[in-house]
Length: 237
Image 1: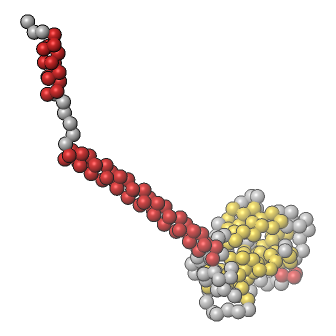
Image 2 (image 1 turned 180 degrees about the vertical axis):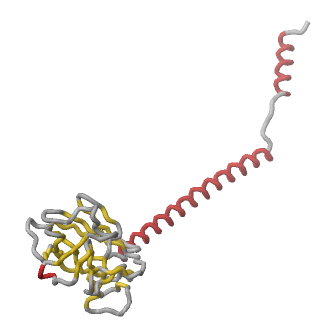
Image 3 (image 1 turned 90 degrees about the vertical axis):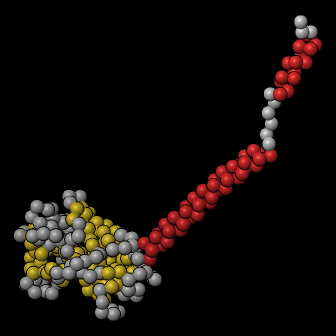
């Protein structure tokens, strides 16, 4: 029969043989694993930060480029009245624009011309990179006809450079050039592009918006309201 003391010593001896420890090699492996994981995590964080900073820089530069390529008005907006039959309506709107100081040259090649012969405007056959949208309470017309005249300093191309000014004439209706503007021009609906017979004429008390949209840069928005009585030539300020 095993004595209690001897039995206890036997149990303790068995427990001692079952103990396990961590060797130096295992400790090194665990430490290396921690270092590798921390390095990967740090690299990921740093890469994400650099990427975010680069994206932010690109966004800022893109915003600056948009601002540099913008147009701005220079002077009043002038509207011209004509008659469609017995109904008086605005048939064209004129405004002078220039590039913001230090801006990138803006391509203002016009899609139409106005030579004062027969009817105006006349399709030029060229592709315009700057478009103009016409909006009122009844309709939205994208890429309406418009013509261009440089004023003063002009280097001979269709780029609006810093220091140059140009008159943009937006055409809503066809004008018969046989009658002078001061004699209340005879105007007609356009077959396409401007106001067609399915559209609504621009008449007294109407509000309208013109959006000049360059190929790059901010949109120039012009919003005006017509008076209750239309003169032949209206200075809408």
